[in-house]
Length: 302
Ligand code: ATR
Image (cartoon, rainbow, N blue to C red; front, side, top):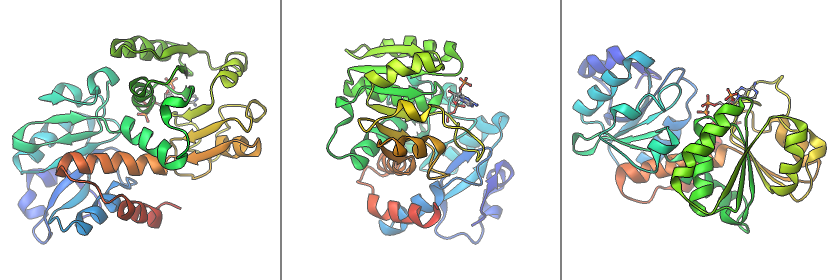
């Protein structure tokens, strides 16, 4: 199997996969995609369950998405994951959308059963499963949450907080308009959760940090080594639980300063695992071998 396939391979699939056994019937579409950890995780699950299929990476450009999905469907693929830049671009291509994918505005999992393109968003359930995995004693619904970011990941996490009934959700984003849009879109879910957009300023963050006990970074800040912590360390206390959706590096500056203040911390590897497990369950209608998938991830994430 090639480390990365592309649209030309899908167009000449028989030649491109002549010696590949078991056949590739699942994959992740994205650009860039070469760093995706879904293949080792999903292939470990497929092997463990004795399913004769493999999961591959596909470098697919924005303009190629519709054709690539169509070809995958015609080739009898079981399903796909989507990553940057396809998570919202795929919405108009779906025959059906689940998990509030339309309200969230983002789809990360596609099922191609019976030639129908059905979109799901497993980031939200992946997030709540990750919180239960990290901090067994406190269900997500008991937290008041401060979410940093208003992109696809933040929207899925916020929708999940609303779904499980968190009392209060603050959304803090560099671009305030995106936080406002998130809140007005999620109002359509209707619930008892009080949602509030706040500016990305110390003055706005300080009171939110007193009211919230779960802080979630759903921005890309922290991916680069010179990124600063998006919240000053002195605003954290031992009452805070801090979840960074970033898993590489495994300890962002945010997690370092939060831990130094006594907060409990976790990185995004549990969410990566749990969203992948939910995708597996959508494709195969059976429980995902989570322990096997976790072990596969641990062998590739530092
Ligand atoms: P994803 O699908 O992973 O959520 P995304 O939709 O591109 O990715 O969202 C990225 C998020 O990180 C956004 O909330 C973005 O803020 P803006 O709406 O202001 O763009 C946030 N982000 C990215 N770089 C940032 C930076 N340097 N400082 C603060 N926020 C940043």
